[in-house]
Image 1 (tube, rainbow, N blue to C red):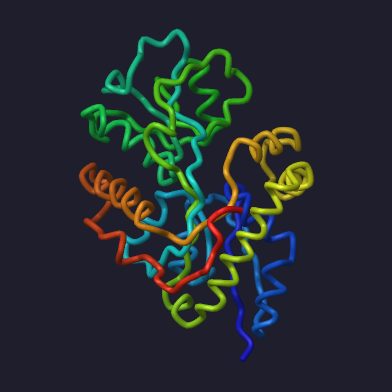
Image 2 (image 1 turned 135 degrees about the vertical axis):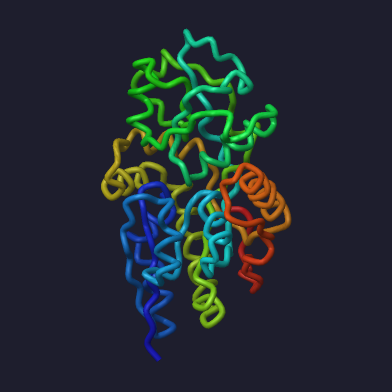
Length: 294
C-alpha cells in the first residue's frame, strides 16, 4: 500500500537540509512503496507543532522543542540525536559590568525562546542560583539580538555562535560546552513511528549517510547549504560551520535521556512547562542499528 512520509525541514538543521536535496530518502522510501514530501518550516522550533497537527511525521530540532511538545501532550517520540555541539554561549558587550551569570539578575537577556538556547540559558541560571523570573527574557532573532546588544539596548545575548559583525565588541560569560550538550534531536509522530518502524530506520540511516557525506565533502556540502538554507551564511561560512561541529547520529541512549531530563526538570521548576514529564515516555524503542561514528 502506498504511503506518504512528510518531513519538516528548516535552515537550522543542515542534516535535514542536505538530505532534502540528495534523494537518498526518496530512494529508500520508494523501495517500500512510499513517497516523500518535504515541508519547509520558517522557524525550526515550530517543527513540533507541525508534528502535533500531523502536517509532518518526522522532523528535527535542538533539545528544547521535543521537551515542550511532550509536556503539551503532542504525540511525539524521539529516535535519534547527534553528538554534542559545543557552539555558542552567552555574550555581553566588552564594556559591560556583567561579569558572571549571577550578574544577569534583573537584566534583559535576548534569545530565541523555545529553541535549544532556552535550555542553555535556563541551565546557566540554575547553576548560578537564579531562576527565569530573575531576568527579563526577550524573544529576538540572532540579527535583532546582535544589533540590540551592540547598541547597548539589552544586557546579554544567548547565541548559537553567529556573532559575525561586531564580534570584536562582544565577550562570552558562559560557553555552551560547559552547560549543555546541545545535540540535534530527531523525532517522529508516535502513531506513524509505530505503524512504520522500517521507515523510521530508513530515515535514520539516510541521515547517517548524509552526515557522513557532509563530513567527507565539506566544500560541496557548504555549496548546497548556502543555496538552500536561505540564511545569511555564505559558502565559506558554511564550510567553517561544517568543520566546527560533529557529524553523524546515534539512537537515543541513557546519556541523552539523562541530559534531556535535567533540562525538563529545570524548565518545570522555572514555570516553562505546564507539567512535569518523564523523558523516557517519549523515547522510540525499536532498534535502528546505526554505526555510532559517521
